[in-house]
Structures are given as C-alpha cells and as structure tokens.
Image (cartoon, rainbow, N blue to C red; front, side, top):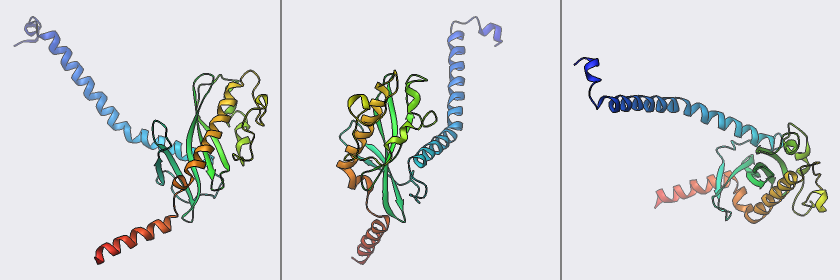
Length: 219
C-alpha cells in the first residue's frame, strides 16, 4: 500500500501521532539515562565542596558523603547528617537547616563540633533580593562567618535591631533574621540529638561488628 493511499484512511493521523510520541518518549528516556550519571556526579561534587567549606582544614579525614546517617528530629522528613571524623573519632556533624526569608526558603549547611560550637555556615539556596538579601552569601560579604565559634550559650541569637549581636542589612532585616534563627534552630537540634548525630568511633563500631560475627560463627 502506497503512502498517499494510506493517508486517506481515518486511522492514519492518530497512528502518525502515536509513532511520533513513541519516538520522542524513547529519545527523552535515552537522554535522561545518558546524563543521569553525569548529573549525579556533579551534584556529589558540589555537595562535597560545600561540606568542605563549613569545616576547618584538616578536621576530617573521612569521606563525608559515605559517612552519613538519617536522624528523626520530629520534622516531616528525616534529617541527613554527614559525620566528620578524624582518625576514626567523631569530630563534627554537618547538616542542612532552613529559614523563611523575604522571598522564600533559605537553605543553609552548617557544621557543629562535639562541644556544640558552630564551625561554619554556608548558604546553599535562596531567592533573596540581589544587592540586599544576597549579602548572606560568602561570595558577597563575610557576614555568614559571624556564626563561627558561637554556641547556644555564648551567642545572643538575634540581629542587633532585636537586641542580639548579629548585624542586619539596610533594607533587608528579614533575611539575616531568618538565617540567625535557622542557625540557632540547628544548634537546638544538635543539642537534642548530639549522640545520634555524631555517632560512635568507627574503630569501636568495627570491633563490635567483628566480635558479633566471630561469636555467631562460634555458636
């Protein structure tokens, strides 16, 4: 049957549309599969860089992306905590917190050491006004470094306008206020779940696993 004859049948347009949709779907699936690994690798690289930025150089010698745990902190979803270790011993916990800014959520990454002190905070995502609220970014100003060394007991957790110790921005008080409260909230979470967030030393955990395995074989 010739093509011009086939076009006269009523089923031809739907058939052509269906074939086109099938080919397009197959092409999209192939592209998604081909780029999935590259996207995942780029996301892992960005996250690893962010984890490094909130930790002092030399503090951790483990793979933070591999050494992570899910903690139930009473929120809608478990909190992912990346454990920083040195020579197998817990050194710090790194996790995300979120504040409600002027233009939307402000997502932060913060690191807290065993004593409950902030080691570093960085902004991962925000939609604040350029030139005003974006001063929370380390690439714009060093404002975010004011949290370093602070703890629940040593910081006055508010902007100066509210009687605290952290600077606000002219014309954008809501943004720094949201960040201050988010970091304080992160410290409160750490105080409630410190043992679970830091975890036991890796050498102890490994010895315990090996001992249990040996006892199981002996029995």
